[in-house]
Image (cartoon, rainbow, N blue to C red; front, side, top):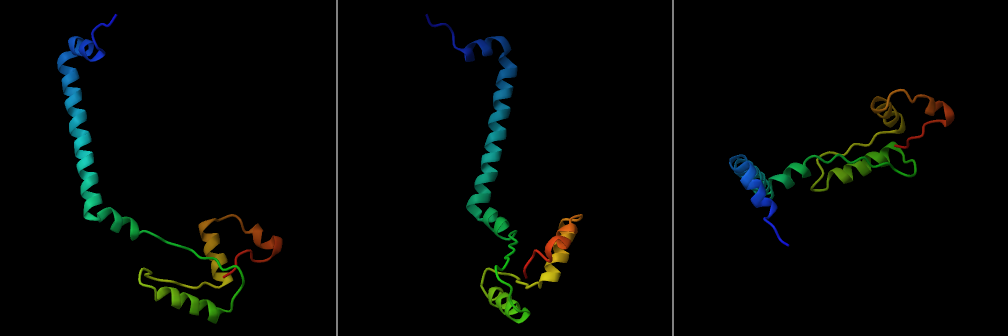
Length: 116
């Protein structure tokens, strides 16, 4: 027992509004797909995303300020790197407190928890 399809029933009940809804969805999806293809094929999305990375490297063992600055200079010399900066433990702690205020009590529990 097969009756009329749901599409046919929708068409008979709402004819013009169903057609307009279908047309609107087609145009909207087509425009979104076109914009996506333009971004991907032009390389624009890759350039935009690649320029937004910020990486923080935390050293396992403490190093002298001279060694840290030498490491930062070596990393800054790599082609894809724009800048590299070494921060000593005190500077790292101040920057951490600016990002996460209200956790000063960590310092009193056992010294500076951040290496350079």
